[in-house]
Image 1 (cartoon, rainbow, N blue to C red):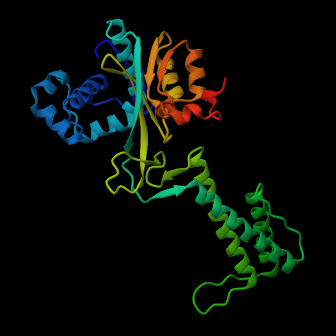
Image 2: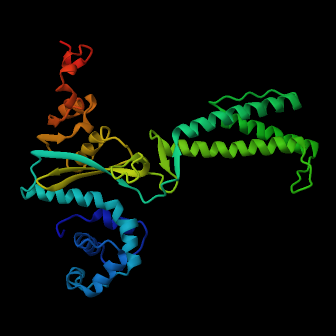
Image 3: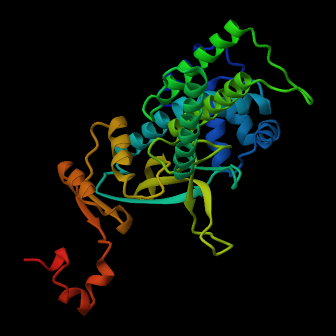
Length: 341
């Protein structure tokens, strides 16, 4: 760790214009050693720095950081530099001849997020509710046209713009007619107030739907308490009912018992993670040349085959129909592309 370049880590401090209490380079060493010793709690790391002679030696006379300093370091500063430091370590292993990129093995696992299991937002539900609300907005527009003999049309493509136009029109009518809005029990609302309040409620709902669609992107779900987490089927299904849980798909590339590549994805399937995982590894080490790659059936796709061939990587990926191909019924099925001449 002495030979690594910590420029990115120091930039995290220079942006804030603060001088660190403990040298960031030394704090990075303390964090790595603590994790090697299976110590993850910031309070336990602080205690170890005061009592454990190994931690004291690593600090080298620097002030003992308190748990809040360690927490800020891990959460706010180390995150920007940790990936670069990791791949510097991999390059060092390569220089020492420990890693040669001869045989790389790729696999992944789903890790449950620290999020509530019942705070899901589903893409289909958002689209369904948005379509229902569109009909209500169109009915509201028809009522405004009927009452005020004006012309309003509402379409899905320009829904926000159409609602804004209607709101401006109704606010103008409120000023012209001098209508006072009333609130509370026993007060009778005017027709104009009812129309305007209904419109504002639809605008608020639409903002929520737009925000949800932006967070979802290409995904089908996310958790309200951890918006990056996607609901996936987990292997440890204690209820045995296929319950979906908020999780991340963590991908690892391994060679000679060393982890040489890491990727964290929101995709529930492995097939779409292979290319970005390898691209991330190439971006940090442009000289890297993988000879052979092995993966399970979860990574089989024509796109992945073409990508690996383009990188001149010899690949060993188990076909998804491998077990079926052994059966006689499969071999006699002339509709299968594997059996076509």
